[in-house]
Image (cartoon, rainbow, N blue to C red; front, side, top):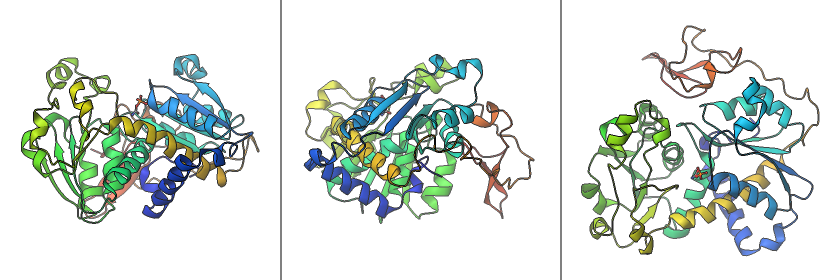
Length: 366
Ligand code: CP
């Protein structure tokens, strides 16, 4: 693995170090103004974005580097049928580092395994979004001064909300953190997070549907948008989209030092009037995201071989197939359905219970 696909790849110490570098960049921007001189970042965005793509690009420019790429996959040779693996291998001949967003779950993972340049997952479908977590963590550290002992409420679309999945995974490693998952039944947090991340780390958690009841306990309220673009059934989206709307009135029950986070974009789930509350930190997250992406680019380029070093430099070993090819991933959004000759590889989660998960999108085998 060259890049950053899953936030779990970074230890607490590595996260601390990235946050320290981000703080140093904030304090001494001139020191970093030529750190990436002569380097190129490719932003390959197959799905819309405002913050992630533009903050990556701003980050690279502020480090003295350059940017190539596309903001719409329909302008790339993917429309002619080029695979994610080939796309990554090709772009690795031109760029030193790649940020990829894709609607297919597991696509950045496949790209990273096939590319000499490090690939950063800039969001893959409803799965993960590790660099949003970097923005979230720096905001929490700056606003709360700690991670240990915090009670974090995640509210809204916890099923498709990839930022929730990545942030839970990161926070679950800190001592005495508690989670409150607030969602409609249809949008509950995925079972793999409950079993593999939350219960495995001994995290105290509750699932509930009432934001009002949860509010007084929370140190952090992480609001999310209901992700209309991920729903098969648009009528279900219409029914669920306004499940939670945070207003000034609802905040009367909140702690005076609770912070409100949201990865953005916001639709209806936070009233604009809440922006004037000093606890609203979602625009601070946006700026912190740029600094954390600068720190990440610096870290990943430290160990990188350089673009185009050899077009043959990456020949990935086949993934170990724990399930011996017996299963096909049932997630229709998984990359195993779109990438030619991609091995159907599952990993054994629990040998005793014979629980298997897809290596690419983490969907449980049926
Ligand atoms: N938070 C986030 O990923 O925003 P964009 O979709 O605008 O990149």
